[in-house]
Image (cartoon, rainbow, N blue to C red):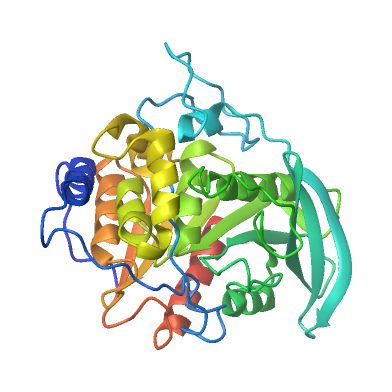
Length: 377
């Protein structure tokens, strides 16, 4: 069902006020202000066994302050930068907006499975100087087929295997006639390593998703319809999806997010890094590099997609459960309200009693997802 919450003024400010209050609580060590760190499945397991894979959830997808470029209605992935007085911080969404992406060289490798309705292949593609691995499900038939790029949630890279995330979605959507390209991201499975990605607030994952879409759009494979491309992200991958929408408007035709992390980087950083004793070393390294949120709020605005929601041009469908104790539904309400107040095409489906892993009502959600992509692709 559509969320019953009405449009509220100042959604962006509400997100930032709450996040800054949390940051100040942590920085000042006010008793009772900080919340305990959560163990997170990220992907609700690997999409097959909800709750099986645990790890700390994605630590931040962030947002910038000045809208630094104009939308790219042609979907080329090369939005025109708007001149700014200063160069953006190299770790920021504005820096990604100015970056030239050259994703391509989509290579189809071994057959992993013949599922009858589709064939599952190993794939690789180029993401900057890196090669990123993944899988691609190709439906039976001549095509060309519309394509969905899938961005998975957090799964510990130490246990991750290629194509492991979003297994239910991979299978279902391929059976409905979509080519499904599931990216592993850098540092996962057969992808090249990027040792700076964690300190860079995992913005490399956003680069990998943008380049995956460009690899599809530029591919000469005759069964891929590069003019009809959608994006689906879950949990941490929901934040990657929101980043992608603000960094490269017009790159995809439509997007769906499930149980997404916050659109404010401070909330993610505090929940899974600064308040997690096991991540204290990483938290210190990030604060040393960029400053704490209460000390340098401008940096943290520039790594939060909510800052740049005015750039979003694609229709977005959001799914979130009221019982999600990994990514609180308040985050989804705030993201929805911020987009809605800007007049963006956003649909918010709320699932009473549903948890982060989306099990009892997953079928309802995936049928809505299919209908949404059918309409927009």
